[in-house]
Length: 271
Ligand SMILES: Cc1cc2nc3c(=O)[nH]c(=O)nc-3n(C[C@H](O)[C@H](O)[C@H](O)COP(=O)(O)OP(=O)(O)OC[C@H]3O[C@@H](n4cnc5c(N)ncnc54)[C@H](O)[C@@H]3O)c2cc1C
Image 1: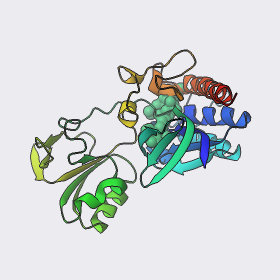
Image 2: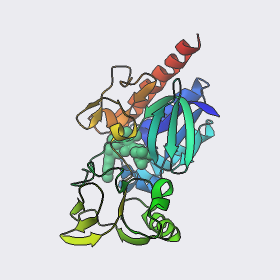
Image 3: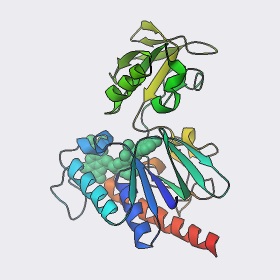
Image 4: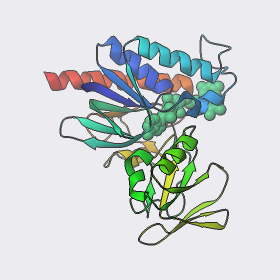
């Protein structure tokens, strides 16, 4: 099935966009990881979201997700690892899964994690963001997993089941450096070298322009116009990923605007 809109992300901007699109009778697939991986879920109390004075981050996120699903949005749990323009639609790779949308709304939050030295240069030459997609390439070889998501242990185990010798690192504050010129030869963690052929890096958020080629950025944010349209026609963005202030109320407003714009784009294309 081709959805009218694929929303990448599961925070407040995504929930708001999904509700607005469903109210306009558009089909929606939300691609997102576990709620525990959304930074807001760590907040014990949100004090400034109107109408909900005592809500915790986790409660708010669970309620928003439940509401979006009750409105008819579909959910695909996982990390989007690539968005491909298919000439009229967009294909979104989610591990070994795939979904397709006529439009895409990025609600990916702000990506504060810096890439590691060597990561960009060695991407596709031993560096991967997806165990399901690339794990088999390292069967019988040594692989390191740098995992900052709640499924990191499970992903390392999956690699082991594929026949890899796996070393898992989960410490966010450690100093990671990738070694190798043409291909990965090792991972240095706090100065200690772990020789390996593959490094899998699992973050809950990735730089949006690493997902879709040609997506214009403004620093760490996705560049959008006042309608939340991004540079690739048919793509929109909302919430922290388009800029400050990083707040729930602003994310919800952005999500609404992006959804209205996506719905209009779909209607205009149909006419
Ligand atoms: C500890 C903490 C406390 C906070 N307290 C407050 C507060 O009290 N009041 C307030 O207004 N704001 C608060 N904020 C800020 C608020 O959380 C954000 O402004 C808001 O959540 C932004 O919503 P969003 O939907 O844009 O992004 P997020 O809520 O960050 O959601 C982004 C989503 O995208 C997902 N994602 C990213 N990349 C991918 C991918 N490739 N594939 C699939 N999913 C992906 C992430 O996993 C996540 O689900 C707080 C933030 C933190 C960290």
